[in-house]
Length: 245
View 1 (cartoon, rainbow, N blue to C red):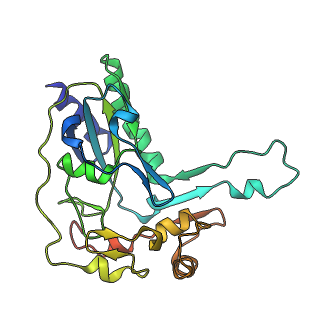
View 2: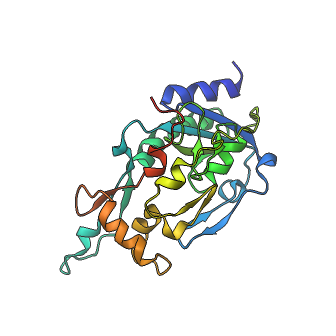
């Protein structure tokens, strides 16, 4: 097998359900910089100056529990704690994907290439260029087989890999179920009003750009298994008919 075939096969064996590759030159023009007041998207070259290929991999979220986030805020309530522990935060699907993606990074490094995993590049738009699906009206990546129920991670490398064709089809058609279902009315077709989104709101509870209406919805609708954890809102993904079992 070629190196490209080897990498793709190893990603599938690691548990990713969809894999695509793009060359650096085809990723020009994608959004970078500060998104809202929270997300700072970086270009592949900023992450790895020697990058030649971007491997994009999708992990299927078959259970909502993968959207669990837990942080260590309770450890900061004790004023007697010395020294003060750093604030830690973990998103379950990120941790799962990182463990799987390290297998690909390790494989490439053992073959003599530079490689690193990254969540910092614009994952959804890059995934479209890698042929994994389209960006839907809910602004999520829509996979033909799994709909929006996938999460993305990239591996950047200086290895020269064969690129896939960009995805051209619009899978949404006339459907606007996600737009109508969003309780925060954060969606217009193919556009997200990020400061209204409950995911942004719960990640940035004190952000000045989050309206009171979004804060009230967050308190009402976001599931909190414990005082230190919450499960991301997935309503716009749940109602999508594409890829449903």
